[in-house]
Length: 617
Image 1 (cartoon, rainbow, N blue to C red):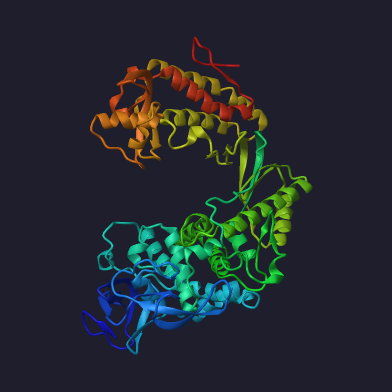
Image 2: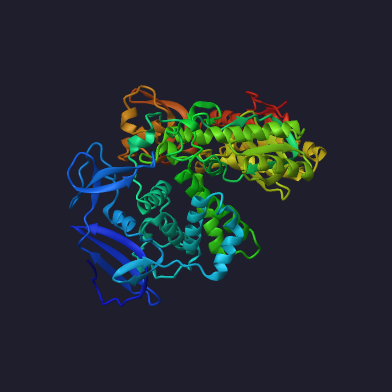
């Protein structure tokens, strides 16, 4: 029986559900009353957590098997305390308090009303919001009722006003921004998790797991275990995204198009879900995944994961994203659009990496359809003579197309796949490297850098600053090929000046510092005779009594080679080095190598001169 622990709660009183816990055979719900923000602890001492099995005696229950859609007979085994793992069981890992919330159809972050001694979510849509919803999404009700029903549910949750409850009453002791607070409530509602687990906590796999578990329990579907999701395939990696090109060189008026949420779109449009991949219907076997003939996808029933992901994608693309781009857009709307994007970005990755969500064949199907879409888009652009120069994962680079040509491409491929190819940006000038790396200069003069080693966060600040000066000079010539050639003539002076600063040792140690994360435990590497540079620095730190561990970021500089206790060293921790020890030649060679990746596509060749350390040919 439900009881309230602190004061009497009257019938039809309203409160936001913000937390839940289980201890010693009882569930405690934490609610905040409306409108006075008083906390309530509501206790149920009758609930017992449980798992499901066919091997033990318990309460007989019927559940729907996710993969067959048929009812199965199981035993519900209740327990007090922690459940021991048992082979062949289901729902052993579901947190008891969450299990209670799922079974009672409760929803965190939502206003609830007390009716007949039971808390009931109250997320009724006003006539205005309902009309807006039908205007945006009513067309899909007949052709995709599953996605429509979930979309309406999430829309109703996300449209409910967010109360401004003092953080202390929510047990949020870490200070965050207004956006952090708003995101916590929105996430709590969509993923159905306590506020304490969504506030400044971006564990996306936890969001997706709870979202699915909420749906499964609400529809009496047995939550599958990790072994079932594998479908007999235990591979740890799947085939990656498609990359075409790049064709190295300097290009002007480079248009970049991309598929907004390509993988979520493929999950939705191609019906990719845990139960639809390798379904057991004989008539679906011929619906093969492109490039993966051993995998087929169901044509008979709508997949749950595909519908849920599709609903979140539609909510972002057709509701939040357009509003966020309007002048004076509400900050909460912009935050919601970003948050849903984060949610969607991870909906593929969890199918590969996260136990209890990983399904390798599903992951293979997602990337396979993504590759098909991108290859078809590239081929269409070639056929239309649009001069595609580079394509990777979800984007396409076109050299100097007209807006009309671009629009025709968008219409053709969008209609073919039911996915949204859109204009992303245009670069006044774009320099493509021989690998998946480039930089572009926007019409405003702002540079955009992707994948270049010199611009990565672990590159010394001195290298990054030298490159920034080069980009500033190149931006001056962004308006024409002639201006760009003129701007290039100023780069040798920038590089010579940088090398002279190295020779004069006027660059500070922090600006020469490399920052590298230790991927392995240092003590496991120390047995080797030759140590990689980050572990050389870690060894020297340990001699000073420090204890670097895996995951730590090691800061070091390159120095003249030396030996210590029978080991060879080429670096020192920044804290142990001085400017006179710096290996100037090594830094000069590294700077030239990093810049060559950028300069060669512009037909600028760097050549080292042993006497002066630098020269241009």
